[in-house]
Structure formats: structure tokens, C-alpha cells
Length: 400
Image (cartoon, rainbow, N blue to C red; front, side, top):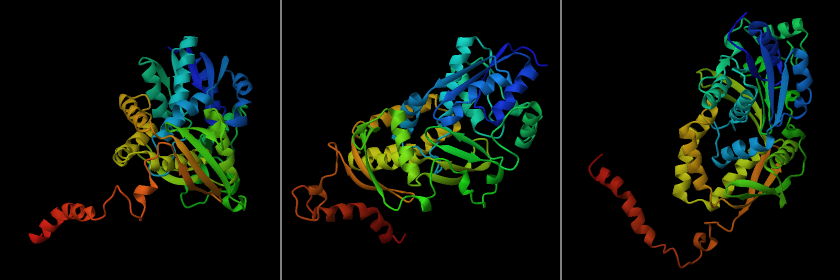
């Protein structure tokens, strides 16, 4: 039996990994284990967590409703930055981990615990995301990562362990892929999805209808933003969590937000993930559309050059790093005039921008028109073009 640990706070979801880990920690460390569950929009999954953790041996169970904080302080800043990892992933799992770890550390302080544990594997990204946040809040905390310690080398082994211990689990050997759900998305990986050629089974999807089964009539909706933050849908005010939940509902009905990608993990290997992000997809498209009429060209280009770095920092787990703090402040500065309304058409898996308006718009039909105006003299374009062509002309005149 391992020594030197008196009390552990485990990030507990009630899924396969953390259910087994809860029992394993008790056996291996012989100390009190407290289960912590962050409610960030898992839906009905949260209801059974408390009793399941107690039945598995947890001394206490904390379930914290963090949905509003999650959307307000994590999802919306990512939307403002247009953060997408490797061109397709809206960072639904990545953006949740620093909040879970932060709240877990609050339980550590409250309970006087000397260790934390998580269910992330030694091959994945989540171990980094959790632990970077743990160490940010307490540089001396002891971190226990069972996947890096135990002899259970596969999820099949975990399933058998759980069956031997009488722990109810939500997966089977026949369908062993794992999933992670919150208000921003649900992800699927592992098991049958490890074959990148195999199309996901339609029954797997939770948040979205198949586009083929979506309504035959499009839905129009309007989203209002204030300083880059979405605040209203069709003129109705919503809290951050309520707004995202409503867009999840609308997007899910119309089959919006499915993504199937092979991404590069921080630790070095590639992995295949299937994601449903209906509300986040809608917000990303709407936000981009509003920026197109409210942001200065050069400010937008400079901010866009930062998107890969911001997405990478979120994906890698550096939410609380000094560089991320700097970049978030830069993004906030760019969003001061991103205020207005975007009209969208949702239809058969597509989210199409069909209108945008803002009192702070830089677009003016009088300037863009093909008709005569008083701002732009068309003959001025000749000198503009010749000056920009000068270096090209010189190269050709010199035979290069």
C-alpha cells in the first residue's frame, strides 16, 4: 500500500475511468477519497453521479454547477478569439479542463487535501491540461495520475475490473468508445472510432439530427452581440448558459455542428475525434459575420494571425499562462466595436449568414457602390496600382 497521502480529491465524472479510479485509489493509497464533479452541462449524466460515487466508496461528493461560469468565462472568450484548433475543432473538451481543475483545487483548499487525481490517460491531452492548472493554483500539490501508474493497460481491462468490483459502467466491450459532454459539445473517441476509414454509426450521435433527417424547411434566427459577446436570440435576452443551450437545441434540430477530424495531440501522436458542437458552430459563424462589418481590416488581420496560437494554447492546456493572459487582453481590445445583429439560416446541416447589421458598422453602401460617389475617385487607382507594381516591374526589367 502506498503511503504519504492523507486525502485525495478526484475529478470524478461517473464514467468508466474515474469509476475504476475511485476504487483503485482507496485500495492503493488507503486514504480518504473525495469525489468532485463539475456540472458544465452534461445533462442527465450528473443526476446519478453523487450516489454512484458514494456507493463506490467516496467519503464526500462535491457537485458544483459551473455552467454559467463555463460559458461566460471560458466559451465566450474562445468565441471572441475565433479559436479553432487545426481548422476544425472548436475546443469543447479543451476549454472545459482548466475550469474543472480550478474548481477541483478550490475543494482541495476547503478540505485540506494534499493530493489530486484525474482520469486522463498517459497518451492524451487532458493530463497536461489538468496538471498545468493544478500547479498554477498550488505549485506543491501532489498529483496522482492512475493511468501512468497502474497495470490496467486498456479500457477492456478497466471494464473487467469494474465488473469484478461490481461498479456499474456506461460502456461495454461491444461499444467501448468514450465520450465527453458539456454545454459546448460532445466528443467521441477510441474503440471503433480508431479506424479513421470507418464512418461513425448514426446511433452514436446525441446532440444533432442527421442532416438527412433535419426539417425540410429552413429556420431563420437572429443573434445579437455586444462587444463580441452574444446576448440575445431573436430579441430575447438569455444568460450565457441559457443562450448556448438554446442554440444547441436549434442547431441540433437542423443537423449543424458535426465534425470528424484527425488531430495532433500535444504529446505527439495523431488521434481521431468525432464532435457535435451545434451552438458553438452557430456562434462562431455569426461572430465572424459581425466582425466582417465592424472590425478594421488591419486589426482583423493581426488578430487572425493570433488565432492558431490562441487555439494551440487552449488545446495544450495553457489557459492560465502569462502568454494566454496577454492574448486574451489583445482579443478583448479588438472586440470593443463588435456589436450588432447577425441573421442566420439553418438548414440541413448548414448555417448560412443571410444578413448582418450594426450601428458601429464600417461598411457603407455609398462607399462600396459602383455608382458615383464623393469619397473614392476611380482614376486614383491607376497610381495606386503602379506604385504597388513597381517592385514587380523592376524585377522584370532586370531580367529576373
